[in-house]
Length: 486
Image (cartoon, rainbow, N blue to C red):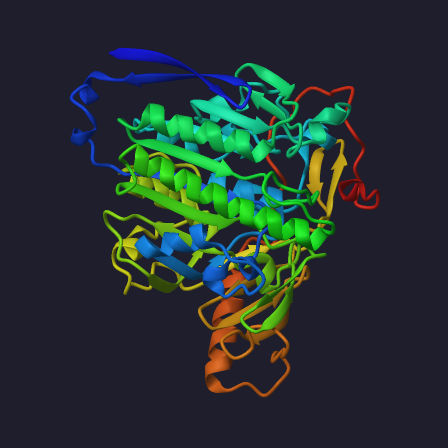
């Protein structure tokens, strides 16, 4: 085994990346044709702000260019809030199974809660075990790094560069943009005069340079475009909408810079880029989209809140400029990444139930419709509380939506159907047909989706974790406190 250690300065950081390869790869990357994988997930951005989907108030050429060597998906569901989406992605499980059906800001609220990787399917760890170099940069927020400084290492990441999240009692930690508070292997510190997204970008680009000769996996949960709305190094604006547009354009710029870094490293052709967002745009922002105004749908299970922009590019294997109506949701992302890496999911998930399914075949054969007949999102609004038993859900059964390629069914907390829409003819969800005289086709689709909904457990799980010790900064959170709105 050989190793080389490179010390690389990045926007005020001293980054040590180890260039280690095992004997099987000493002959070079040409002996390993598995693709690199980069998963970019923007924070709070709906389709109405991506011009490839028909956004009219902004132009995103670098994001759009991913479709020049890949595929644009139309039917991809995330969850409407941050924590449920992120845990769903990491576990391949729906929130009713993994229990994180509400947002829980671990660094801010504490209470012993955290993402306990020992309680869930070890999807992320398998990427590393398969021989991939692994990296994460951006936003985490489901562990408190003061309590668990090794959380990311345990999960399977070799290198990390993260905004800590807003740590209660540490005012500097609120900053993810200007003068950001960043956590690396050297600890947490403020970087005066720096712009957080630049630090994350440079970290990833240098990781690519160092690891270009071995398969690598990069998870980039961006800080952009989440509030607070701020000016970027490229633009100054006076109002929230203007700043939001500038943040979207900066997101597009960073996307292009990472793609360029892959080209300069000579690995672009065999790198899969998955570009998406965790939930819809903040509700105070409205954008023009395909001829109509769309208000941001964050925290809602309407389509702008959960039907995410989702682009996949793989120049070596995928056809260009393909649009797909295949059904995908966020449980499918890591099973697909593992499939791309040649790792059989079923070999290490015995004892765990994984809801996700690989859509690799859709990427390679665009005419395929994919393995799914329905997708799911759940948990509009936030309804968590902290008791002596830990973080518990306010509802026994959280509200949820299911859809197929044409129809969408809303299920309320009483497990009853509430709304039913024909999305192809009513994309804005203006005409609820649940109480109308349905056609035979409508009735059949309604009954099929309802049957799926009723097959789920009657009681949603609570989050599973071994509680961390009480901390001085823990905050009391109840459904009535509204703490999460601060």
